[in-house]
Length: 139
Image (cartoon, rainbow, N blue to C red; front, side, top):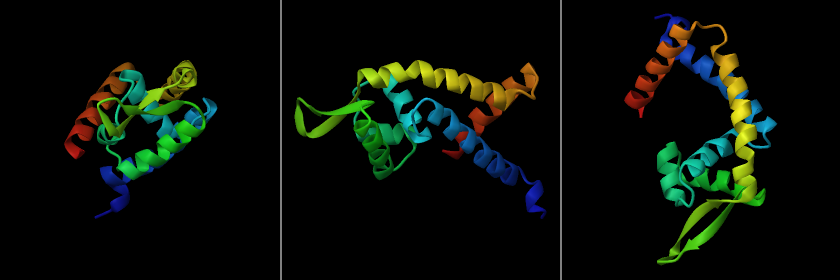
């Protein structure tokens, strides 16, 4: 088997290259790439539990805790105790966490253009469909 000509090898190489581009896009908005994914989840539904964020992102709770540490430290989010359960906390966006959305969305738009720039519209749609199917099948 010629490993370099497998889909898995190509996906791995693309993943590394795209992760670097993603990190640069997040950095331009004042974030780290992992923080961007947590913020996206909070923009969809503010006030989530840490464990729920971990499940939605497919990350371990300690990894999410580390990401949240940076968001809390840099005032993008705050942690508040849940009224009904003193042991449970929820993560809420701060004003800064809501305001960074426009910057990150602009950077993501540029990332998307760079990622799909060499493809036709049909190829871009097909790629999206295939990646969505792979993601569902792999998780």
